[in-house]
Amino acid sequence: MKAAARAVRSFFSALRQGALSKTQAPELVSTPRIGLALGGGFARGIAHAGVLEVLERYQIPIHCIAGVSAGSIAAAAYASGASPAEIARAGCTMRLGDVARWSLGRMGFVVSERMQRFLEKLLKRYRFEEMKIPLGVLATDLCTGESVGFRDSGDVFLPIRASCSYPGLFQPVRRHGRLLVDGAMSMEIPALMARQLGATHVISVHLPAQGGERPPTNMFQVVNRCFQILESRTEDRWRAASDLVITPDVRTIEWDGFGCGPELLKAGETAALAAMPKIQAWMARPQTAPGAMVQLPGTIPA
Image 1 (tube, rainbow, N blue to C red):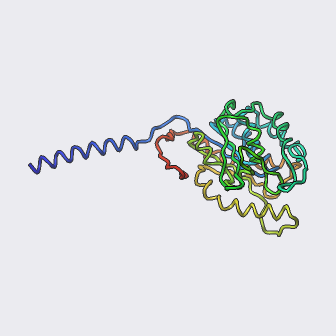
Image 2 (image 1 turned 180 degrees about the horizontal axis):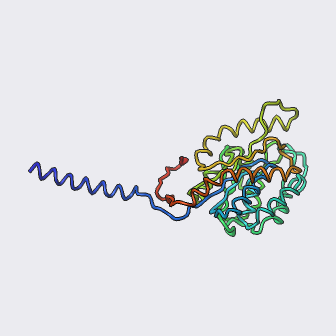
Image 3 (image 1 turned 180 degrees about the vertical axis):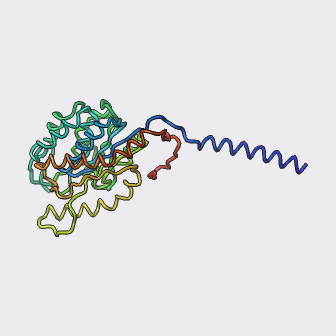
């Protein structure tokens, strides 16, 4: 009897193990779904166009794209069907007055209504549901400090304006009772949003600001340095959600250095070329589908 009982237990144990192995077995797909997560940097955002140009040159398919601040403009333009060359041209000719109007107020120095006209000229489509590839835009709730994500439906103009509203300079954008500001205040790079849009592999593009070796000399530099310190606190989170980080060398460029467009484009191109062997390796071998990994709510995948 004992031998029979042991045999029955062994049988059901083997069944359980077989079922478990089936649930854990990764499903393989032929092509990875690559998502781009573009960080902010105001004029330094021109470097994103250099990265995009290299990805197109090497025919790397982009499944989805997300952005914060200047990265949200580049992301929306690319998702709408604008070419990297068109994005680069718009960035190199852009000036602050194209997207903002000085209007001294209690909550900022400039308002961003003009940005819609700029976006209407650059973007090919104006609603999330009409984009050629899935698009995500991240802003920050000024009262709660929480990230506010926009995707799937609705027009993109207000979310982009909100994501670009650098506190202290731009007045916050109001939406549904919320005051929204620059998305980088809560998450410097929206890598996790790219995963939520369906990416199996996330490429984050980080545009580092000038270092803090020299002390600030004016109010804007003081505010900028404070935000750099705050943004560094979220770095571990977005890096954990990234499979690859591309970091163009733009540290010598000022936040409003639109006149340095060719240099910024070159920096983006150089950094993307350096990362290309790893990206091509993804394309050359079978990949694990996202359903093979279970992510608990509120966690960030490694």
